[in-house]
Image 1 (cartoon, rainbow over the protein chains, first blue to last red):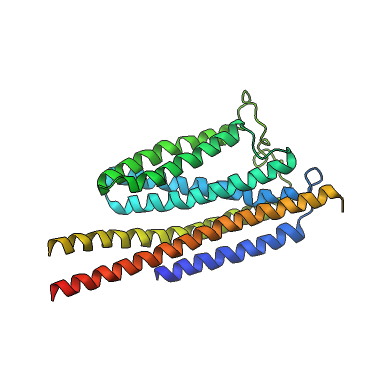
Image 2: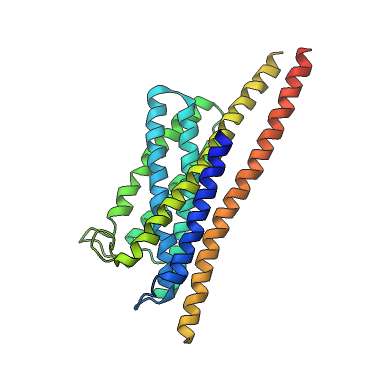
Length: 226
Length: 53
């Protein structure tokens, strides 16, 4: 059942993504100001939104772990953080390539980009910290606290282009201001759904790995006891 | 098509390639780790069975 769900989510996500590429490259019109590089937004923004969604899952799972001390929540948190970090990297890489065309530079240390890079580094630190702590309860507790702490950066990233007193090179918000033409909405939303489906399949694989790793630990203890 | 449009297309190609490479690379790492964990799990299971006999 678990494998069927993983394959189902993976195949559906991939098909949606391929169909979306057809729409992005062959159906929607070129942007008058930016030209073809504009089409990168359909992978750049959905990747960020998917990462935020998975970081949100990680925060909820971390709170649940601190509350219950049940390791299944720790497994959920680490799986969601790992997949979320991968999508944050996609967001940073595509944003940097877009910046090279539009601004002539690969990177600008403005509020939005710096806080997003901080988010990536905080969760990368989370993933690097885990193998360094041997005791499982201590590792899970420290991870849960770091995960909640790191998530405090998400509203900062979100607000970085919305505060009037913050000067930023990054384009302003277009989603809630009507800046995105109606023709661009379907590929944009389908991109988010496709990434969420693919990411969920990856999280299910990671959850299975975490449960197998716990079984390995218990078998090792059993072997020592025999 | 102007030189600017061609450069634009090149960078669009780089952007989508980077995204695909990161995602495919991540899936590759997932599969490799799954295989390693499954191998270790079956090795330990057979060791426990042998010791219990």
